[in-house]
Length: 429
Image (cartoon, rainbow, N blue to C red; front, side, top):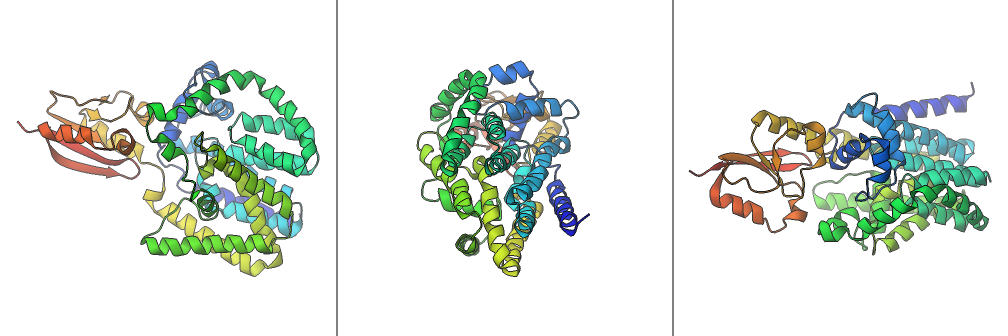
């Protein structure tokens, strides 16, 4: 076995090891919703998700994966697998010894990719399919590229931006887009239903658009920063601001120095980000994780700079990755919402729970469907819990809390990271 293969195996082991850290986190809101929907029969996954703006591929894979276990660690091993395969694929895509090794190493330790390799959602698979599609494009295996692109579209709608970038790289690839569309025809009626829901999202959850997309001013720099540094923040804010400038400066320096596949990488990275930014004025779209298939382009830009100046850029990238990963692994506030812990606590109390939403949240259905959760003030109850989760959207003026405190007194407050404050009220009488 050659030295290069040994190094690649070590990188894969490192990448796997980092993606197994803290894998037993609670499922957060979207993951619980994913798990609930994937638990349904395949016919329902295909035909009865008009209110959910996602294609069916990952849901169906997850459905069969969940036949083995519903444990959080097992569920997350599915995206972990896609994350590790992505490391192998980016090495093959880079195609040069140092370039391939640096690309694989930088993706293996990338905090943002690690985070979404642990997310029981489609994003890790989306990134893997994106690399595979670009590999087929560069190798001129256009039929395989078209089939992969169809799978991308069945995974996430933002995949259309990758196809747009490929057309700009190889204009003749538009012919093979027709193959992808033909393979996609069975889903088009469902896509039309979901598109209508996505366009009208503000009518039934006011303010939800602001959660799903970034503001136009900070969209592009925030995407690049998160791609590099992960889902982190630092206190005080002035330190965080300095760190953002540092990370963006390193990225800009790498872009300037990279000489390998410059046009391809620029289009792969830039076109989807710009296209999603423009589309976000109509449909919420620009959260970075929806564009995870562009992250490998940025990784390869960094690797191209490292080929020229290995000590400098390996040191800088490793430093940024260590900061991002250590913060993520050690700070509960940067991890997923602690729904399992919150529901365990509420189950022990055995009293009514009030939420301000049109239904109880998906984690309740997942962790304890029998818990007494209501969406209106339980007049007549001597005591109950009130959850503050998402009230910034559903009750921004705190009207329900004001109404509660007219008749009940606050006796206790619990805080669960991500889930937020849970208040216990008792009757004044």
